[in-house]
Image 1 (cartoon, rainbow, N blue to C red):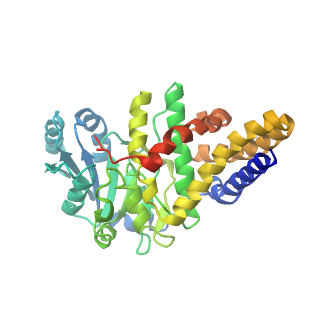
Image 2 (image 1 turned 60 degrees about the vertical axis):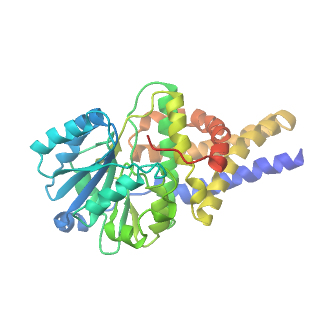
Length: 369
């Protein structure tokens, strides 16, 4: 019993260290007034979108991307073996927008899983040295998305990590998906602020083409379906060349999955990349997840077998701390509606760990669509 008690206390202590000394960096972060914002307006950008059977999403979202408050850019849509009206939609839009280009990619090699090969083709065809990546189902929060994302880059800064939230809808699943997205952002943005960038999200990511050349593309992890964003950033990003971008104008919105099965498949595909991170990142992220899980599981045992008052007091300290920091972070991430749900969703996340842990360690590569 004493052993479980110490596990509970130690796990809670680790959690508090993460929140007080690491995640607090994001909670108190203020987006700087970037002096490069205006001078970098002359740097052209290639926006790259990989699409497979995305006719409706492209019809709805692509005009917003094509109508940014800037004309010094091109949009490349890599049409990856689409069987719907994707090509028809793109052809129609090409007639209206001269800066839209279509790349028809026909991947017949079954061993080439995921969208990396389509994305690599888009990067190869890109005219410009600055690459801004997003997905067909994403819609920029504003017409200043491009300019604000590009503004973070300089001679030294080669990677910009953006944020991509989901549309707010009713229902438990949407809340859980949004919470998981926020918690993931808390981690990768805070780690980047601490000089340890380890991932980005492909729905909103900008970097220089030269980095892609230096890394030999996605060669090191081409056999893994996902990872064109997080594994690539894990490889090339460091404390000197990477910055986060947290202005609301830069957020890239997309719809969340509407069924539990759909979300499970999506997360199963994404989680297979975690075991390929650098060792120091795996250790820190593993410690974070294990302490979160142990805090609740050991806390329940301590409450039942030792003292419910003691267990509640320790729980109350942690939940108070995380609720305060989540409140500050959610304001920055434009999702204040989640604040009142934090204590519940934080506890529900224990189930998330238990369900997805086997996939994290034993999951196999799956196709992106």
